[in-house]
Amino acid sequence: MSTWVPVFCRRRTTRRWVMLGLVLGLVALAVPATASASVAPNATNDLDCNGWSASYGSARPAMKELCTDPIAVLNGKATRFIDNGWYVGHDEPSVKFISSQPGSGNRMTYVMQLPVDPAKPPTASGSVTDYGELSIAPWFGLPLCDPHSYPQNSCTPDSDSNSGSISDPGAAGSAFMELQFYPPGFTPFIDSASCSPTRWCSALTIDSLECTFGFATCNGNCEEPVNFAYIQHDGNPTGPPSPQLTDVSTFTPNRETLMMNGGDLLVVSISDPPGGFTTRVTDLTTGQSGVMVASAKNGFMNTNIADCTGNPFTFHAEYNTAKQQNQVPWAALEGGVLMEQEIGHGETCNSVTNQDPFDMTYPGGQSYSDPNVFDTCVGGAEGSPTAIGEGPCSGVICQNATTQGPTGPVACPTNNAASGALCEFADGFCFAAGTRTVQINGVPATESSRVDICYNNRFQNGDLDFDGTAYVPDWPDGSPNHPTSINYIGPFTGGRTYPQVQFETDIGGSSNLCNVATGAGCTVPPISAKFYPFWTLGSAQDSRSDGLSSSGSYGSSLCVWNFGNSLPNTKADFGKDAQYGTPDVARYGGTIISAPLPNPQLNTRCGSRRY
Image 1 (cartoon, rainbow, N blue to C red):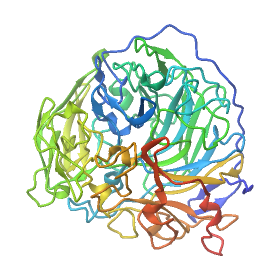
Image 2: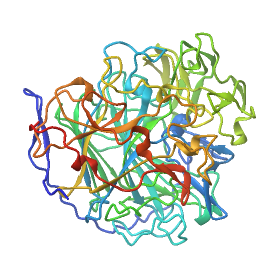
Image 3: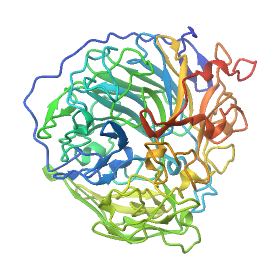
Image 4: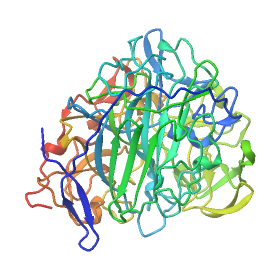
C-alpha cells in the first residue's frame, strides 16, 4: 500500500500540478440525532425524489434523474424497485474503492479536473457533443447512517459494527450520499440539468428509503426522500434542504454557490467531524472554495416512515473502513466508496415538439413557470431528420412508446406509463436550442439550452431504448469535437491509497431484456446499444486529449482516471466494457460487477518522467 501523502495545488503562472503533501485529521464521534419536534411536510416537496408520491407534489419533477437506484427484495430475492407502480432505475457506471485502513470509510480526498467542452456548438447528430449531453452528474458516493431509512434500524456512525447485508434483518438504517457535479449549458436546474450556461456547480444529496426489512412495508407517500444542498462559499444552503420543506430556492443557485469552470483543478474533501458530515470543494485554479455540512443546524432532516414528517438530523458516515461488505443494503450499486458517472439522460434532436409546460407553485408564495417544455424529440437520436420520438402523452397514456429490442428500439407492449413497464414513454422533458423566458417567483429570467435536447425523465427514469447520446461513441476520445474527460486522482485517506477496486454498473436493471434473477441478457453494453463508456487510466500530460490543461508533479508515475472512450494517452483500458464483469445474481442480477482487483492506479505506470 502506498504511504506517500499528496496535496495538490495549482500555480496560475506555470499551470502545474505540484505535490506538496496533504494531511487530513478527523475525529469521528457517534453523535445522536438532534431532539426536536417533528416537521410536517409541505404539499409540494422532495419526499419522493422519483416524483411518484401518492400524496405530495414533487418540488422538482426532474429530480428522478438524480435519485439513487433502489432494489426491492421479494420472497427473499432482489428484483427491480417499483415506486407506486413506476419503475425508477437508471444507469450508473462506477468504480468502487476498497480498503481496510481505519478512516477509509468516513474521510477521503480526491483530486479531479473538470472537462472542457469543444469550441464548436453541439450538433443534433452528435458529431459535436458537450459533457452535459453525456453525463448530467458525475458524483462521489458514500453510505451514511439514517435510523429512519431502510431497514429502519439503529446505526452507529463511523463503525464497522454496522451490517449492510441485503439479507440481514438487523442491518443498519442506511442513507446514500452523492456529492454531485453538474455540467454547464442547459439551464435552469429546477427543470433542466445545469446551474449556469457556462460554469459547473456541485451539490450534496442524501437519499433514504422508507421501507422496512424485506420491503414488507413501504410508505408510498415518501418512498425515497432526499436532502439537497448546493456547495456554498459560506456553507449556508440556498433554501431548505430537507425533503419536507424543499422549494424553488433549494434548487436555485445564489451568489454564494460555488461555480467552477471547465478545466479547473479541484480538491474534493469528504470528512465526518462531530458537527456533521462535511463535503468541501476547493478550486485550485481560481482559489475559491465551498462547503456543505449535513447538519440539523443547516436544515437537514430524516423522515418518519409512519407519517412522512421530518426530524432535524445531523448525518454521519456509516462505516469506519471501506471494506467490500460495507454497503447500503437497499441500493442497486454495491457501494461503498464510489466514483461514478450518471448517464442515459440525453437525446439530441433536430427539433422538439408536443408542448408540455412546467408550472409549479410552492408554499410561501414561491413559484416557477416554464411554458417552453416539450415531450418529443424529432430527428437526431431518433434516426432520420423527420423521425418522431416518444410522446405526446395525455395523462399517463402516451403515443409511440418504445423499449429495448434485440437490434434497436421496438414498440412497448403498453402505452400506459403507469404500468411499471421498462419502456420509454416520452422523450421529455425536452428543451429547444437557444434562450427562453421562464418565471421564477413571478420575475422573468432568461434560460438557455445549447442544443435541442430531451432528458427522458418525465415518466421513466432514463433512456430505456438506448438510442441517446450516452450509447453512441461520442464520448471523450481525443477528438476536438468531443469534450475532454473528467480526470481523477485518488481517493486518499490519511495519506494512504485504497488497495483494491471493483468496476460496476447497474445498467442491467434498466434493460428490458435483462433477467435480473438469472443474469440472462444482462450485458455491457446493453443489447442494441451501439456503445458503452468505460474507465481508463492515462498519463497526465500537457494535452487536451486527456482533459489536463497542465502537467503535474508527482512522487511516482501515478496515472489519472478517465471516463469515456480510449484516449491518445490511455495506458490501460481493462478490456473496455469487459471491465464491468458479470451480473451479481447472488445479490441482484441487474448489477454487473467485477471481482475485487488490485487498484490499477497504483500498479499501472504512466511514464518514467516526473510530471
